[in-house]
Structures are given as structure tokens and as C-alpha cells.
Amino acid sequence: MKAKARKAPDFRICPACGTRNKAKWEYCVRCSESLADVPLGEPAGAEVAAGGVTESDGGRRGWVGGVTAGLAFIAIALVAWVALKPKIDAPSPSTGGLIFTMPTLPPSPGALVTPPPDEARTFYNKGLDALGSGNAPVAIENLRRAVELEGRNGEYHAGYAKALWTANQREQAVAEYQNAAALSGTAAAYAELAKALEAVGNPREAQQAGRDALERDPSNAEALRLLSAQAVRDKRWSDALPLLQRLHEAQSTDVVATQDLAQALDKNGHPAEAAALYRQVLAVAPDADITRGLLAEALLAQDEKDAAVEVFRQGLKSRPAAPLLHRGLASMLERTGNLAEAIAEYRQYATLAPNAPDAQQLAERAERLQKKVAASQPESSS
Image (cartoon, rainbow, N blue to C red):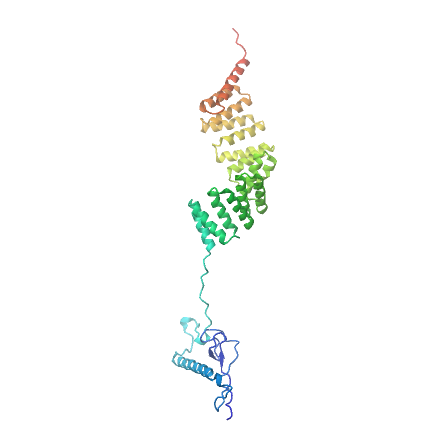
């Protein structure tokens, strides 16, 4: 018997789910996959001969029949859906024209997937919370876990180092600070390492770490403070001055940094600049007796004797019972030639601070100066 004629293709098979779709549909009716580039397919059963099944196609007849039945069911369902669905002649004004029939509905985005929590970060945060509340053992345990889980994170090593330092495990803390600096490479990490090394008695290594910090950030205050303090301690005033100048620029409101810079300027032969900075400190901290004494010395170095004496007198106006001010004034009066007033100030100091280490010594000095003054007086005629 002659075979039936082949039918023209009138549908598209979805490449994603295999569903048969009408030729005019732009998207798959089942999974919304785009059908834009999918060629037209062929109707199932087009190759079946009219006289029955031959031996060569008998093995696939059951499969073809099943697929044909399934596709027929889908086709019937679609016809029913088309017949029953309401007709839409024009876009509804309430939707602004954005109405799609099922075959032209674009694919919807997949469901949002919540990423799994970062276990290392969780331990790190718990460790910092415990450290902030003063629970060092819990902090150490959590931060140790964070480091174990993510050993290349310099931030975690830095937190672990702080917890160890708090628990006085300083050798291990220094090792963790070294890990933090090597991994993060930041100026702050090297500055923390420098402070730790200085605290455990390794000044040379601390100095190198401080320099490493300044290479990364020339204005890092912690590194500048540490290196300048080392220079002042070692009396390397020429090395201390540029460091303190940079520190003052970075921390202009820090009165300690300002006073240190003033002292370095004074030691490097700049008393006028030093005096100006000492006055800045006293404007903020008028009770800083040591600063007042340093200002007086800077003024005396410029041969401003009266101004040097006045610095102490101004301090005593608001604090007449301050022993150090009486002591400083006595010394300044003696050096500027006013011995009578110097004697009175030395005695006042010994009275106000009788237990001071030099109280007795300065009381005796007052007596010697008294004899010297008496010896210089001309004898009265009888």
C-alpha cells in the first residue's frame, strides 16, 4: 500500500523541556523557554506506513504510540483552554497594555537562593563581642576557630592577637600580629606589630615594623609616635624632630604630641618656635606644670628673663599652693639674680611638700642663700 503523504511542520518542540508548542508561540507553554530560534518540527507518526507495522519499526511502535497519545492529550487540553479562556480584543487600561497570553509570557527569574552563612565570620564576630565584654577565654576560642577556618585572613589574625594579648599570652600574640601584618600588608597592622614588639622588649624589631608602617602610610600616628618616642628616649633629637613634625600634622589637637614637638624644637636650637607650641599646650591645659616650666626655660634661652619669671607667677595666681610652681619660680629667680625672693620660694616649696625627695636639700639651699645675701650687705655703722 502506498505511504501517506508527509504533513507540513506546524509546531515547535521546546529545547528545554520537549513540550510541543504552536508555531506562532514565542515562548514555551510549559517552561517559558524562548522559541525564537527553534525551527518548525514535524507531526508525530508521519512516517508510519498505511499497511501496518514492519519488522524494523515494531520495536519502537509502543514508544511512538505513547508519545503520540501524550501529545494528543496536550493538544486537546490546549484546544479546550483556548475555547474556554476569555477573549482579549484590546489591552485593559488598568494594566497599561502589559497583558500577555500564556504562549507569549517571558520566562520568570528563578527563586532567590540565600547564600550559606560564613562560618569563619560568625566565629570572628562572636570573638570580638566576647573581647569587648571582657571575656578573654571565649574570645580566644572563637577567634582561634575563625583563624583555623580562614587562615589567610589578616583581620582574623589581628583579632586573635588582641585576645591573646589581653590574656597576657604575649609571645603567641606577637606571632599573630606578625601573621596579620604579613597577610594584610596594611600600615595599621604593622603599627600594631611595632607596639607589641616594643612592649615585649624588642626595640629594633619594633623600629623596623614602624618603618614598614610608614612606608605604607607616612602619616600613621601610631608608628610616628613609637619611632619618635624611641628617638627621644635615646636622645636622638635630630631624628625625633621630623617624626614629631609629621605626628603633629596628623594629630594637631594632641597636646602630648604638641609638647613633644616643642621639646624637640627646643633641643634642636629653635626656642622661639618651641615657646609658641608650649603656649598652645598651656592654652588647653593650664595646669600642666611641667609644660609651664619648659616654656619658662625656652624664654630664658632667648634672654627673656622677666617673661620666664612671669610664666610661673601666672600659674600661681590660679593655684597658689602648687609645689612645683614654687620650686620652678625659686630656681628661675635665683638664676635671674633675685635671691631674696628665691629664698622665700624655696622655703615655701619645702613647706608645701615636706616629704618630697629634694625638700630638705632645697630648704638647706635657702639657708645658704640667706647667708650669702647677709654677707653681701654692708655693715651698718655704729
